[in-house]
Image (cartoon, rainbow, N blue to C red):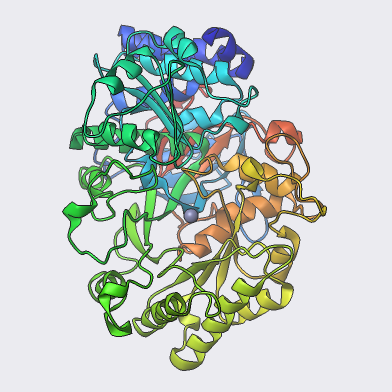
Length: 614
Ligand SMILES: [Zn+2]
């Protein structure tokens, strides 16, 4: 069953897998290498990269040249060139390379393939993916049906590096709507795919979960708390949430080395789908006002999106220090502390935000890893009519950010019938600008999906940017009144405001940007229903939102977002032409080569390399 699922998925890549298996055989000479290559392009490739020690300290004199491509630079003239050279991490020349120009380093013949700038995600909870317990299979969000999920799990086992008793896991993004059968695999199916390692699937941000027989045996053996598992391997969500209790037992068994491995796997997955830079929106475990990190360690009632926000970056930071991080990360700080009565008057509310603004540097770091600023909320949004105390705290949070000269965001999508909450945000931004001046701070509005043209112009006048929700394709359903579920892409783009596009993974939505690009250009949900009638934009506009506009949103438009001389060397070679593929095919795009900082960080093995030295 698993083999059939894999072959159904992409027969063209199937041929490439065989090519790669031969090369791996020669190169690695290990049984693990062969079985990995047979397992599927996604997982096999991550193994090849990690196993090869590729991501060490970078040498001082690096050069990579790509020739014979259709390289969409996304510069101001929308130039398309055939060659590009990246030297020591930055684009050295764009166009104009010939075989006689004496290139150094590695030269790759693209044979006409389409290239786009590395995609940038402007709103994700990505570092949660980097903390997943078990040998995590992020690729399950790319599966179309149960057979493909099983094939990916089997392929993960076939890599041969999962120790006995250790879990193979897949969590988050996967929801039954993504799979043709509209369900997760059953216990018997999981047993058939992975008979000799425990398996744990956890759906969305809060369960339910599903295990195989070994997984069932493990969870039936634990205590404090116990976990109840159904005969069919199901572990219910709900209250009390048994799936979260199960997650807890896996989390408390994670070592720091486990977390580093998970972080590397998450980077490999990001590179595999073409996202070369992520703006992470930190998730907060609990909002009691405590500044004691140990109280935020895993608890049995924590859902997948609860993490210790003091400690969740540690593995990534360690990898970065070792020169092994290979996808760019910018960390926004999100604050869940609303009105907490025990803290007393307004001056004593928002303790964590106050400490953050006093003691943290914003936009501090290097090209691979840096802080951002305030994430999608500095305090939970509240309106004066429904929650006066909450509103007072929210307003104070805006004031504190403005006074501290920090960048600040809010997250308010509105709806087809109400933009009141967006109005509150914009009116407050205007008040902050009048009092403190915020135009040079580049504040933002996430999920600006139903902002009116007038509201967009007011935001633009404040030098704000917006980011549009690309994830509605997954859980969005047609509205009874026929109105679009949003975003209203054309009017946002027409406003001229910097407008990024995001997936908001990795719990409620996948990380794969091609789903969002498909949605922005077609309005079709995962079931093929039109849910956003009349709100489509062109492929060029959608890609611009995922590259140039998102670079602006990250305050990095001088370094990222387009293929231009002097910018950082991030690009993606695609397996099909984004601009010409059918709608159905465009949704299935997979990068065959991903380059970050001039280094190849994902290689499906399709392109043969021709190495030249001077
Ligand atoms: Zn979010």
